[in-house]
Length: 269
Image (cartoon, rainbow, N blue to C red; front, side):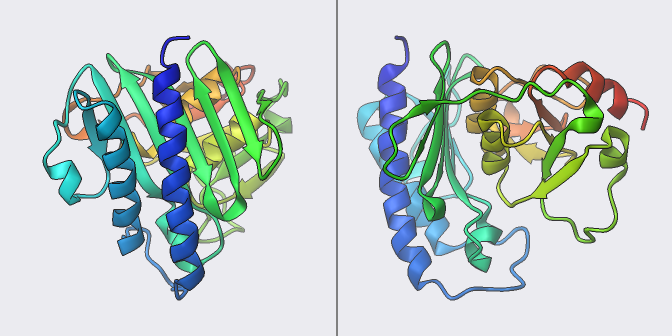
């Protein structure tokens, strides 16, 4: 299948970065009040592991990653073949030592994400997908199994996954518009998109006005290959590899069955 080599490389790079992160995580002193924009030495070490491994296998490819590390400095940033890397997505979860962080590796061809890997080192689980090959999960020593989104067809019966609220008793206006039956919270957009792909949640909503390709590229593939839909908040197609690696349309990831209703509900705000 096309992109098998890229998927194998992404899985290997995520695994090796994850092993390093588990060691660093065990020795890390928790920062209970870690801010949202925190970056750690673990982020940079993880990224260097991933970039060096991928560059060795695909020396002609371009690379987009969150941290300004030595390896990234010498790499092309744009191209028709583009790797998008978040070495620790949910660094606040790493810093607070609640296990809610992931390694995200996506591969984009001509602006379209075709390979995605989201590894959760603290929980020893990985979710991965390849365009046309479906989405898969592997937890601990279990054998890989296919992932499928839920079949929930009514917004009022959905489970919404979102970032931790400042006030759990106060819903955002977007959440009020969707009116889900249940809300779960976690750090890491990668984990949240994996939850939708695995059928553990029906909706993931990101309302940030500006964020980056590395926040969502890997998770995007998981959801679509598991049978779901990923767009901007108004149903826009998301593209990758644009100037600055910016995403400016928000993100709505769902099981697909409720996507149109969710877009319509959000449009009332």
